[in-house]
Amino acid sequence: MKQSELKLVQSELKSKGYYSGGVDGLSGPKTQAAVHQFLSDNAAQLSAEHWTEWNNARKRVAALQLLALLNEVDVGPVDGLNGPQTESATILLRQLLTQGTIARQFSDITPIRENPHRFPQENEASLNDYYGQPGSIELVRVECPWLLRLDWDLSTTTRVIAIHQTLSDSLETVLNEVYAHYGDDGIQQHGLNRYGGSYNHRKKRGSATAWSTHAWGIAIDWFPSQNKLSWRSDRASLADPALDFWWQCWEREGWLSLGRSEDRDWMHVQAARR
Image (cartoon, rainbow, N blue to C red; front, side, top):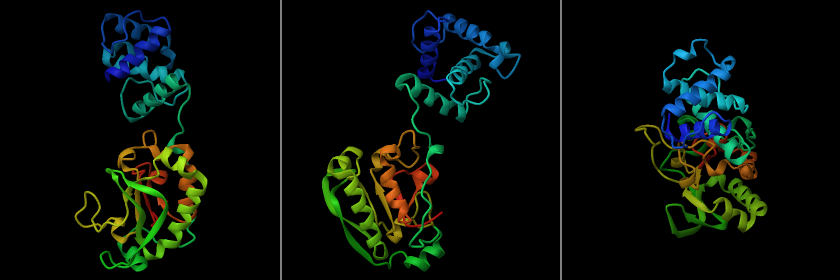
């Protein structure tokens, strides 16, 4: 258990009258006694009758799980075993206790599944048939209604996005709808001016053979510094519910958000299906 998690347990047990020590994230006799009494008073919620035989570390995890359960956060069985479900529940419990509410979950997001331009599936054969071979495609420069700043060098600006020629009208439609809705203030507020690039003749990260969709000029990255590859919706800035309209503009045109469909790589949007 992380020190921050034990602090959370200590703080909550202190507010419930079980604990009188410091909220320091250190497990001493007072913490152990408070955890044991808390579990004993709620033994019916535990997954095993022999919980008293658990070691102190497992009891502390069980106390954290029990706190989540009592706050109606789905944590699974209160078994003292720290896994992905417990980790997720801890994040939600902390949000609830500090902010008074739980942020929207990925399972609550429903992407629009339209494909009016019949964009192809994301496999090399389909992409080659629809867009041509990487390295031999024709790009056009689409002007963005707002000023873009390279996310890794904010002093470098541009107003154009290099994109596959077949996507120019669709991209213009999306950008104009977004700008009409959010305006300059909203664009700045949500970091939609933080540009991560489009065309890039490269392979997928971690692959020596598979081409990235960027190699066809059919993908764009937005605000990568706050929407990193492995970040999920509880951390990625572009998962903010205020940006649902942003994503819906893309989705109505048939573009795919990896964030909204797979809860990863929230920076990335592409004109290819999965």
